[in-house]
Length: 453
Ligand code: MG
Image (cartoon, rainbow, N blue to C red; front, side, top):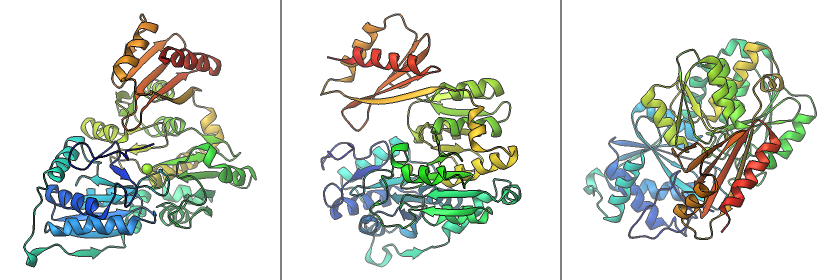
């Protein structure tokens, strides 16, 4: 399912979200320490921050990468097990380069190495290529014995992360509402930060799966409805105002309303834009996002900028355009006032802020948004190249308006379909968006048929 097939010696190591693999398979001690040396050689700051999610192999991979960094003469500050956005905040505030050991929502046997630039954003792909190049050429700084790097520990980042989030919402107003919240951290990196944040926001908190067991025994780390039945069941009891779940490294947050209904990520983003964006603001979202975002922006007249798919691209574009809000349909929301990265804890606080401001339950807030259906499906390519698949689509829909920002987006009378090859698997992803569920299903089968050999 992911970037496991990588050969040492040449080629790409970084996928769309860092380097991912299984410890002692792709992620051997030698590989990790050499990548650490390449990162230490590349990084512009003298000190590099290292953090990890709750995975069992976090100490092993983190220590191997750290040893590589130290060999180049750079120092490491170990921030422990914290959410990825907490590390990103640290990097932005200290102008230090960062490394996070995480495989986000992937199964527990995986782990990964992801680099954070000294401005807190995910590293540009050109910089990742530069690290790969150093790795393949074994072109590492090699420190004299007397000046190898040192490790310090800093356990204060969760506290600073929570304080930063609180400074960006109306804490007193949220506290006055005494919300009852169920939080499902899914054994992931927010096991401490999100329950603490909620407590400080005056919520009565029920915490599910907050044991950081590193195995994701309670549920799959991807916060999709099929993995959140336990949380939805608790919410259906009727005793709570809000349910929230994070992915493994807590850069994303998804919500369950007070009746136990799953809120699609694009609706969370639309809600935040509706209440937080001002006239003239810039909003950034990938071409895969539902038109609910477009319709909300049209109503408020901020400028909407569409990018290729991928959170790092959205974040970089936001930074360049000084955009106020952005994000993806999977629960990854980026709030420019906070930092240019997805932040699950921040998203949670903003949703509570909107509930407190409007004094409306989440179901009502979501019910007031324009309704769109966004369908997603993956199709095996069976080795057929993208050029061939694209040709088939163009001949099936020759006269339709199209957009080639990422893959191929084809517009129909009652919706659109985006078809794009995956960067890491031999599949194409087919997105369909329409106001009408039946029309969406018809569009989906038309496109899937056109892709058939
Ligand atoms: Mg993640």
